[in-house]
Length: 201
Image (cartoon, rainbow, N blue to C red; front, side, top):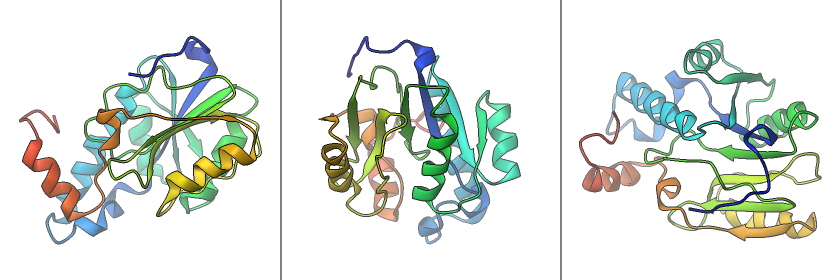
């Protein structure tokens, strides 16, 4: 696990973007029906929120049901007007920049997430890639910079480039529990092959 003494728990905000649970994981529709996909999305999201531990966790959303769920699991809610991930995170980052010196953005579909602590480092962009080393599962960086979010296919390398453009230090770290995400039927199959009985409990 990555460790750092740069920040106390009150200095870093964890942002977890979540869209409508009922519309989540449509690419799994060939394997799971709508209620099962919704249950999976909620279960993984709750695990990610719990992984924030003592950090201040904020669910980024524009859906009332998601907002209600966030409050029920003890998270703050950041309402955004934008639907796309990059605009939504940009809007949320603007809202929290005067309250926190650093932010850690975690996807909500990390079924093995255990801890988001110790990732933030001063003046540093820290990236936990997906297991394919193409995407960005967790991204940690200072607030109030000109960093432009680049989520989407191949985001790891675009985020690395943004760190250099912003003249911030860069760390790409391998944290196995945070590198698993569930987007495709292949991801689901691979997860089921290694899952222990309590994986989604």
